[in-house]
Amino acid sequence: MSTSTAEIFLVEVHAACKHVEARIIKVASSSSQATTVVNLSSNGNPAGNNAYLRPTLHLTLYKAALTGDWESATRVFEQNPKAATAMIMGSMYALHVAVGARKANEFVEKLVERMSLEEVAMVNGSGATTLSIAAAIGNTDVVKLLVCKNPDLPNIRGMDGGFPIHRAAQFGHRETLLYLLQVTKAEVQPSPYEKLLVIVIVKNFNIELNMLWCGEAETDYRTHEIPEIVEKIRESFQVAVQFYDNEGCNPFQRAVLFRHHKVFSLISRIIHEQKLIVADNMDNFSNNMLHLVENLSPPDQLNRVYGAALQMQRELQWEVENVVPNIYQDARNIERKAPRIVFTEEYKELVKEGERWMKDATNSCSVVAALIATVVFAAAITVLGGTNGDIEFLVFKSEKAFVIFAMSDAPSLFSSTSAILMFLSMLTARYVEDDFLQALPKRLIMGLLTLFISITTMMIAFSSTLYLVFGEAKGEFGWAVRLPVLSVKTAVAVRLDTVA
Image (cartoon, rainbow, N blue to C red; front, side, top):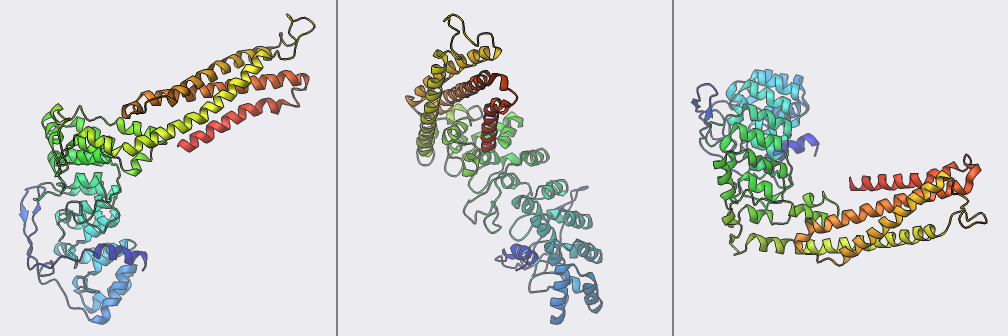
C-alpha cells in the first residue's frame, strides 16, 4: 500500500457509523451569529448533488485525484460535468481523495474552483469532510484553501462528533491547529472547544483515531506538551478549563497526571473562581488533584531525568497543595485511599531503585576518593626532589611549580577526605521517601563536587611534578604536562554529553 493510499485508508477506518436519513448542521455566523441549516441526503450530502458515473471512469478519476493528474480529471469532467460530486471507489469523492493524497494540492485548488460551497462541504462514507481529512494529515495549505472557499467548514461535525480542529490536535499538527483556532467559531453548540484542551494535553497516536471524548479505547497515550496552544485556547474560550473528559478529569488534572508542568502553571493565570472550580473537581473514581499527582509518572517523563534517585526527587517536586484546598489533602477516593497512601504504594519500587542506585554510585565514588586520598597523602609527606645536604633546604623550594604542587596537593587531600565522609553519610542514610527531595540529593551533589575538586587538584599536582622532574626539557615533554588537563576536560565533556 502506498503512502498516499495509506493516509486515505487511515481516515476511512471509522466507517463503522450508520448512515442517517437526515442531519442538521448548525454553523454560527461570525457576523450575526445566525444558524445555517443544511438538509442532507441519506449519505450525509446535499440532496441532488450525487451524480452517476460510469464504472470505467471510477478508476480513472480516482487515479487522477490520487496523483494530481488534472488533465485526466478534465477529460472525465468533459464526459460528465457532475463527476466531481460522484462517489468513486465505493465511499469517496474525488476531492476527498485528492486532499488525502497530500501531494495533489494544485489539483485540489482547481477542483475546488469548480465546486459550490455545499459541494465542498460534502462528507464521505465515514462522515468526514475534506477539511477534517486535511487537518488529520496536517496539510495546512489545503486547510486554508478550503476555509477560504467555505468559511463554515471548521464548524461542521463529522459522524463521530468530532470537528476538524479536533483532528489537528489529535494527530499533533501544531501549525494546522493554530490556524484552525483562528477560524473555528465558539458559538456553535456543542462547542468545538469543549474537549479540545484535553486532546491537546493528552494526544493519542497509537489507537485507531478513537477520540478521547468517545472513550472507545484504552488510554494508551503518548503525551506532548504544548502550553502555548493550551493558553491560546483558554484565552479564546474562557470556560474551556471547566470541561471534563469521560473519566471526569478537567484539562489541568490531565496535565498533573501526565506531568506537564508548563500547562499546569497556566492555572495561576485563571481567575480565583475558576481556580477553585478546577481544583475542587474529582474524577469518576473520586480522585482529586492530589491523588492524581501521587500516581507514578509516565515512563517518558521519568526517563527525562538520569537515575532513579533523581527521578524520585523530580516527582516529589510536584507540589499542588497550594492549589487544592486543605480539606482535600486527606480525602479518600473510591478505594478509600488518601493521597499519601496512593503515593507510598505507587512509588514503593522507585524508592527501592533509588536507594540501590544511590548506594551503588556512593560505593564507586568512595573507592575513587579513598585512592586519591592515599596518593596525595603519600605525595604530601614525601619531599619532592629531596634536600641539598641540609634538611631545611629543599631542592625545588625556589621553583614556582613546587609552590603550585604544594597548593594543589593539600586541597586534593582535604576534598577527597570530605568526599569520603559525605559518601559514608549517604551509605548510612534512612532512605525514606521525603529524604529524596533535598537531603540525599544535596549529599550526593556535595560528594561529587568535592570528589571532582580532589581529582582536578590532584591532576594539577601531577602536572607540576612532571614539570619539575623534566626541568630543562620542558619543550620536548610539554605534552606530558598538558595531558592530565586534557584528560579531565575529556571526562567532563563525555559526562555532560551522557547526561544531555
